[in-house]
Image (cartoon, rainbow, N blue to C red; front, side):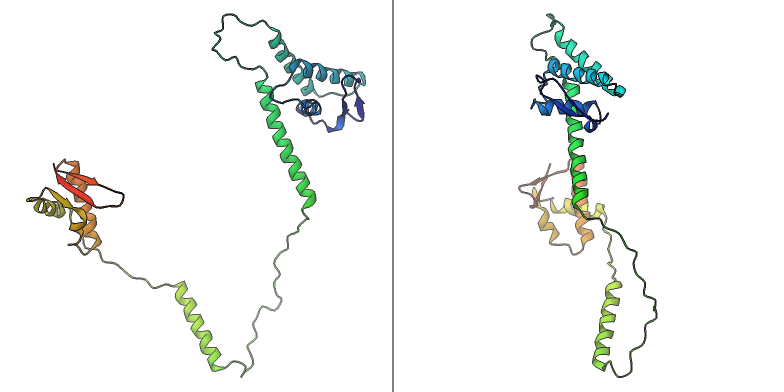
Length: 248
């Protein structure tokens, strides 16, 4: 479709046909040109204007894509739903779905993609064109030795110290930690002995008697085991605070 079509004065519309990329584009033009709320489309008015455009295009013997007629049938179907009498058997509390909702959703999505497309098009015009370049390789790859006498002994020593430092950073010092195993059974026995004459026991106080991480972990697992068998209960007054062990 080429050229500009002017509608009747009462419609007050001027359409530039090459700008329409589909029926949704035409509908958005009709809605925006009349400042209509996209969520409250006067379906009868828009349907009439849309059909008038198709009729005018046919008078000018223009080739119209089939999708325009599909949209025309959709608009007529929605319009007919508004003309049908209301169902008296529907409860007033029941919310009746708006026949325009599906069309409105399509228009909103199309409008969003249209704005994104315009943004990238404008950005492509504003941002300068960049061209990548392959890294340059020097023709002379060999490194010529420095002439004798141009490097002092202090400079040589400092360079050697720097090399040693970098070597240590690539190969950090490694160490090993020896972990002594402590069984949960031993720690369970330890707790039984501790609580034989007292009803309450502090978990933190027990940790003062241990020196290795393995003992601490075994003690905690022993506490969980006794809780599971309902031998003791554990209370904590605040986050990350001490645990109070009580006999059941």
